[in-house]
Every structure is written in structure tokens, then in C-alpha cells.
Length: 89
Length: 454
Image (tube, rainbow over all chains, first blue to last red; front, side, top):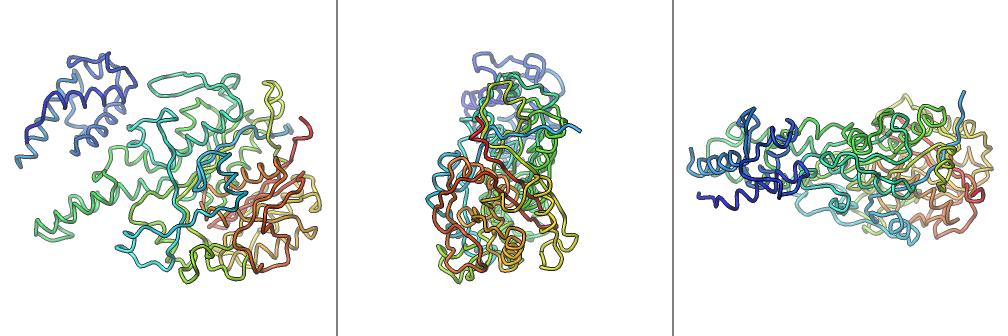
């Protein structure tokens, strides 16, 4: 399964904006979710639930590092996770 | 002891007959019924005796600033409570000032948040979330144990599971907080910044009435100035599990009657109650002095309350072993009224074989003056923990307009009481609304018409 990176990025940006009630224009791929946006642990879990719903896949809280999680990291994580699931690994 | 007069300043409703108060009341006066056939897919799981229910059309949550994330985090019973509470606050004329955009929390202008409480009744709370999270837990990793090694069979089962879990086939990380009944009051407290008591009353079908009664008492005795109070109930499991539970208890309306006749409280032909998917009723209460200070007009006053317990059975009331008459006697004493002062009673009136005659006998004994009586459940069906709050709203609107909605399908009454079988027009100064709940809970309120005072 090959995911379109731009579409994945858009979905992640929209989910972060919705979770934290901030404008999309405030976000870039380099934005750090905890450090720049002051997301707390409940915000991160909410983001995962939204991504779970959008991509129909299970994202586990323990997969998310404690620090320096950028939007780029989330996009790469989703693509990697979905591609490995599609490949049966 | 402080004895504040308590007024009701705002109303909000989510119901099978409309999700705003005006539409809902219009449908009540027209005697509309919300009855429909149960979903066909429920028969895949269970052949029920009852074949009818009243489904709920959910509000448009986005109108209330609620997002997709909120619908994934919180049970619908919570979201419905937020929409009805928002409506009640707006109806009461409070200005909502944004406090925290990210948390979507507000402050009510002119309200001391330390003297602001939330009192919520519910029957089964957030049971849909518990169901919808437990099933994937049970069938997910254990699927091979349950369905054998054949991957095709397991795949079919997984597909069915996904279809029946409304697109959320995994256990949510929010499962624990999503399933708590006190999430309803907790989220309301967070949304409006109230720091007085937040109480959750699990009183089954008497929960909504009991919650308003407790809020009334907290304001009357000076503990708080303002409260959001009411009841919320919602069953969102697509397999009809809660319906099945009531059906197996033989409490629901039989399929032997034509559906349009099936739900008939206080009628000889009654067979059981009409299962409702849910509803929400919320009222905004405040002390009269608080309402005067902000120049607000009020819809009604609460004159008294009473709560008693049967101490007899979890699911049945008997003529000999109930504390219903005690509840009414206490209610009149608390309100400093005589029975003849009461001109309208919004009855519990479920349409069950056992309860209706007991209720009718007691009403006849306690109120020999023959006030008007109707049953809102004849229209909506039974919304369990929300019913008392919705019926309180109906009672207030009846007093406001001097109109009593018809009790639908009441052709052969079981008792010689003054039942409203058509729209009745009458001035109402004092009215009673009451509820009985599984667990032996009885709760009642006396409401006072204050339109001539303003």
C-alpha cells in the first residue's frame, strides 16, 4: 500500500488543528506538538484517536516519543505503520 | 436556615419530538407520537417481544462548537447534555464569555463560579461507550479462541464487528473516562467553569426529577446561587442490547397491538412502555434574588421537592410496599400546599401493566380534588433517566401557556381520574411532576406559576 504523502500531511495538519483548536496556518511540518503547541498527554491521545478514525488503523500511545514529536514525524509514522500493515509485517 | 426562593430561568431539550423547546412543545400539544419499528438488524441478535421504539435524531453538534474529536472522545449522552445545557443557558439570558478556546470552556457573565453547581441524573449513564469498547476487547485479540483457527471465519466476524461498532472497532484510549456516568456532569462543569458541587444521580427513571430536586435544595438552602440540572440518556449500541435487556424483563410494549396504539399509559389496553433511544432535558435554576439582580425574567418557581425510597424491590412496585404516597405527602408538606392547590399533574405514566394502576390509585387518594393528569411518555416513550427532566420542562410550558397536552391513546382509562385526552386549556398555579425508578426511587417536584408576578 502506497500512501500519498501530501494527503497524509493534510490529514495530520487538520487533526492537529482540530485537536488543539488552532488555525491550520500556524502549523508546519517542523512544528513540535508538545513543545511548540503545548499539547498535554490528553491532547496527544485525542490526536491519536482522530488519526485512528481517519486512517482506520490503531496508533498506540507508547509508540509516540516523549519529546520532539514533529508533525513530520507523525506523517512518517503513519505511512510506515500503514505500509507495514499492508505488507503483513 | 436560609430559605431562598428558587426560579427556573431557562430550558433545553433533546428529544425524539424535536431538539429545541419550541418544536418539542408544539409536537406535544399536537399529540404527536415518536413511535417507529425497531431496526431490522436487531433481529439478527435477538427475537424481541416488542417491535417498537422511539429513535432519537441527534443534534447538529457543530452548531454548539463541538468537533469530530469530541464525538470520538465523549459518549453521545454527554454531547446531548452539552447542547441542551447550552440552550438552557441561552434561554436564561446568560452571556457566555469564552475563557479557553482550546478547551472550549466559557464563563457565564455575572455568575460567581464558586456558587454555581451541576446536578445531572441518568439511568444507565454512558453504557453505549462501555458496550462499544468492551465488544472489540472481547472479540479482538481473542477472536481465534472464540471463532476457531479459520482466518476466513475470523475475517467475516471482524467485518461484522466493524459494521456494528459504528466505525470504531478498537478499544478507545478514552474508554474508561468515556464510560463514566459522571462524565456528563464533569464535562458540563469544565465547559462552564462551575466550581460548586457537580453531582451525578443514578436514580434510573427518577433521575432527572431527583437531579432538579437536589439542585433546588442546594439553592434554597444557600449552598449555591445557580445550577444546571436535568437528565440525559442515550443508547447508541447498534445491536439493541439495552432494548433487549428491557424486553427480556417483560416491561416493553407488546407487538400484538398495532404500533400506533401500543403505547397507552393509564389505558386498559396497555402492555408495557415504549422504549426510547434517549433524550435530554436541562433547566437553568437560580435563586430569585440572583435572577432579579441581573434583571432576568423567570419561567416558574420550584415550590417544593420530595424524594423517598420503597425499600422493597429493584424492579417492581407493589400496592402494599411502596413509598410513593409518602413522597406525595412529603411533597405537599415541603411546598406548604394542600392537595386542592394542585391543578395539574404530569404523571410518571409508563404504560406498564403493574405500575399504572398503583400510580392511579395513589393519585386518586392523595389528590381527591381531581387535577388534570397526563403522561408525556404516551408521546415520547420512556427516556429513563431523562424522562423526569423532560416532563419538568413540559410542566413548566403547560403552566406558561395554560395548556395541557393530550395523553395519547387513552380511550378506556383504568381509573376515574381527570385525564387530559385532548389539549386542555386551564390556568395552572401549582403543578406536580413526579417519577419512579428501578431501585425503588420516588421523586417529585411542585412547580409554581409566577407569570402574574412579573
